[in-house]
Length: 332
Ligand code: NAP
Ligand code: GDP
Image 1 (cartoon, rainbow, N blue to C red):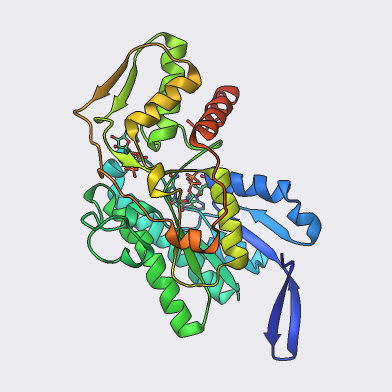
Image 2: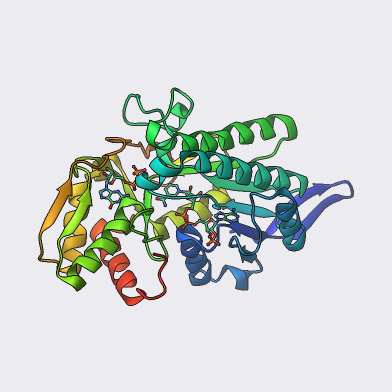
């Protein structure tokens, strides 16, 4: 692993200690990266890791973005900050998702270039792929057709990160890239029932149904298909991308196609984790969103054939236990 960055300056090669700025460092993925950085003791090996929240700088604001980069002088950036939410939040706030994410991404990527950051790893999502597409989806298909209507604002804003990275390589030779995770979950997620993604929303709903002796209300038919990645697994993979992956083209970070499951499978796993015995209702008047977005992890496997993902049931149990233990302070 490298702690120093070899630089070709005007005065010959120089060495700069590695300083990693993590935007969105207070969120689900940011907290998981912080956990791995501590566990692996990267800072005792000479690296500096800085985890930002929106309180440190509003990255929709170009001046605040420049100031925070000037303050921390990063050599590397993991760019996670975004307006993030589940299907039902996208249906209500499509325009906000487009404008905020477009502004954040342009500010971060341009400021990184102006600050001579050597590598940026940004975070896209498998929901940005075309709605009508052959399966499995792979990294070459991002721009092949319109995304699903439900989250088009977010999807187009994220697609523009790929456009930006390619142009920034073409014009400035910058090796900025992006990862494409599937649905993520874990401790420190947003568990707000109206706004959250499916897994944290259902964890919160099941917790309350058990506590209050009520039924569990699942939105939609439960037939939608999704691939889920545990935030700590994703964190390890993003750090690997930062250190080792040298392509501009994004890389899908996902469990295999064989691990795709229905929303009903997810409900069953959460019900089991909480030992919930009350009734479970499916509200078919609510949207199912995109039926599926099956992604291939063949490219990831070509680099890391032996990476082991945490078993789904273990990760769900850990997340349910974390939520129950941190109910008072969890984002909800
Ligand atoms: P999250 O838990 O909602 O965290 C979002 C982070 O972004 C927080 O640290 C938040 O800061 C920060 N942020 C939001 N608006 C900001 C602003 N205007 N200025 C500065 N910081 C701002 O999100 P996440 O689930 O960790 O997502 C991380 C990345 O993964 C995002 O790029 C997301 O699009 C992508 N992704 C997520 C999923 C998923 O299932 N969650 C799936 C695929 C891709 P505060 O804590 O201060 O609000
Ligand atoms: P997506 O994967 O980007 O579509 O977003 P979500 O993580 O929000 O997952 C949406 C899928 O979960 C849809 O098929 C919904 O019908 C289903 N779902 C079931 N119950 C819930 C819930 O309580 N909240 C959310 N967000 N989705 C739910």
